[in-house]
Length: 111
Length: 113
Image 1 (tube, rainbow over the protein chains, first blue to last red):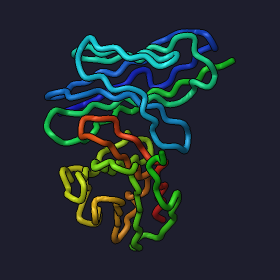
Image 2: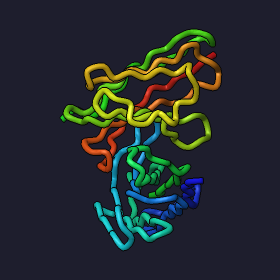
Image 3: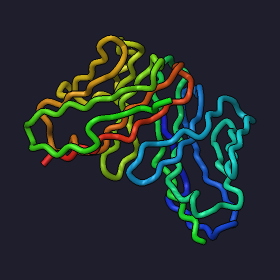
């Protein structure tokens, strides 16, 4: 069964303390891996799509990487405004646009 | 450019009633998706439209749920009759291509009492 697992479930960091979030997946055929940010009461906000192992993408303090079994979202010198739930989702190569989501990692950055 | 919009933002109904949710995708996006998140669970796929055609409806839970996209623009998701377990947040998303980024709306929070 296709599955996406994110860890940790929750992460507390001090402002400036860098860390990484993990998204591991077991799927029959990966077309793409998506990262989203979600603030309370809002819809997921698109961050990155990664399509092949070895690919990396960056946006401000965030950097996403992809291997054949997992993806990491690295947060460098986070600020309190980076506090949110980060969601990982995979899309299979079967023709449908369906995304399979993980449970998310809730990040809290304290000043 | 306007993002994905959803209406209503909240809905509280009694078990057995009917509710219709609406989604307006980003202009020009042929692909439209419905997802939902029930309490404590991950976001789950419901269905995928390409223009007005249902490309994949494998996530629709049962025949109480009916999605339409007449004319390939906005979409509606009707729940009839609603059950308690239908409570959750219903998200709509749209994308330009199937493999491209999906942009989500703010969601409709449905509570069935």
